[in-house]
Image (cartoon, rainbow, N blue to C red; front, side):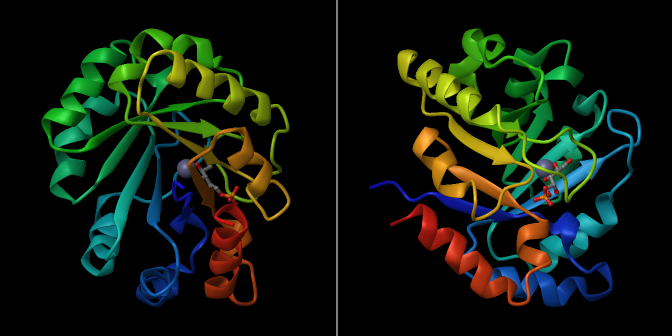
Length: 220
Ligand code: DX5
Ligand code: ZN
């Protein structure tokens, strides 16, 4: 049976205790570090940038999954590769030449991801699906942690899974936003492979235990 992955979103960490929170993820059953980069233009919020990612990367011992919520992401592909990103996801809505951008990400040795907003149809990915290693499906409007999960995501995941299978692609489906123990199992049943969780993990009394519970829930 395939392992379903948990990717805590560092956006919800305590930045005054960043090393502690990175070590918590290292020592937990989490699989990936999810890194949200926001530019205040593509989304109405600014998160953190290169120096903070560098600080995280110095201590992180797991896959670094970068989610770029920025316009014209091609400008920074090389820089994120140099900073140790394993996966680099760009937004469909921010790329005029998505196919070219995906090739540029792979040329730097990273896995190429495409993030899609809640209003963007998964059908738009069909012609490029074989070139996508990872679809980061937004289940909230990007820009902020702590928002409520959009229920329509379940049917989008199912539809995307069909597209992947129909094309013989090996694309992973990642769901990002509002993930909790209430929707995790249903998301995996629908076809999700990776669940991002920010507030649910970091607002919990015992984040390590919460990660374990979430992982057990989707791998039983
Ligand atoms: C939203 C970000 C998400 C966010 C998830 O723009 O892309 O990764 O950090 O946080 P929660 O799990 O709190 O919705
Ligand atoms: Zn994200």
